[in-house]
Image (tube, rainbow, N blue to C red; front, side, top):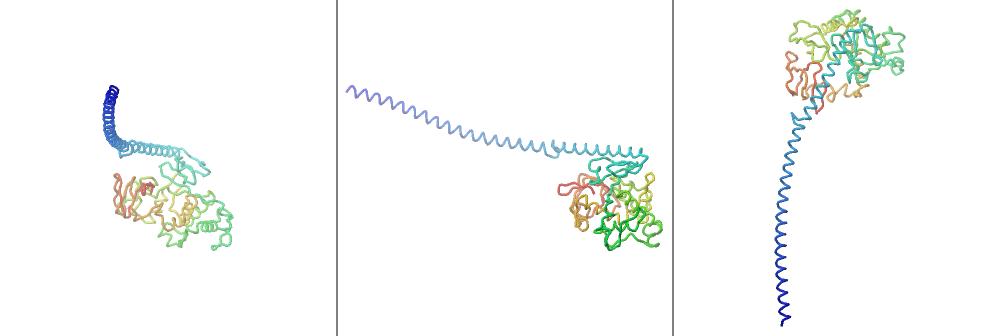
Length: 364
């Protein structure tokens, strides 16, 4: 009896312990359950806060007034300022150069100097020089090897043969025509007494003398200089009878509008730098420019002759003007760029204006 009662007492004690244990365990489980819920809420809140901070940080870095945007803008402004300073130094050098020099294997005429600006310092990129007034010119290379290349001098339609001297104008011209034959078309640099005067303001003998001078120079020097920009004016001309202003070849100038071919030739020849004077380009020179772009820039004949929308000037294409001035009335008036401007019709731009299309910037 005593043993049985003692055993029952022990059992009751263990039962109390078990109940106490289960109670504590249940409290712990409830606590863990509640803690897990609090942890998930905290995690979600943390993620939301982080996303907000990330958005603020991204906006601070890349927004219109963001750090990266300002840094890129400052970099561009610094590079532009550096180029402008380098160009000013080149103009000063040109004013001091009183004799012929050489740069990159090309003869630099007296009164001119290379800009030495990145992108303008090699023949392949387009070697640029300036005169003492800041007018810019680009070197168009015409390889001297073409005059002995049988592809252009033997059994050819125009009967060209190897030129015997720099005064062999006929064969020099024919070889150049064969070299750039893909771009010749039906045009010819030939006039009679009447058409020469009407088209150029020159007599036939004056025209032929000027053309022969050009041919001789190309043959002897292996190329020629052309304006980096089209002939322009620093004073806007808005009508045909406006004063014929002094032409310039500078970035930012107005296109020289309301002018006849005869007037253009007269004004071009007035652009003298030292002993050198300018002229409108002859047809063969235009063809040679196309050949130069094909050879040095890798453009296809299709891109050069038929469709330049991927790289050059064209109309009826929407783009954003980011630098310069523009006209929508054929140059009667120009507007300053304010931010950007889009137009899907023909727009006349000031020389060297910059446009952006498909995220890429290019000068016009």
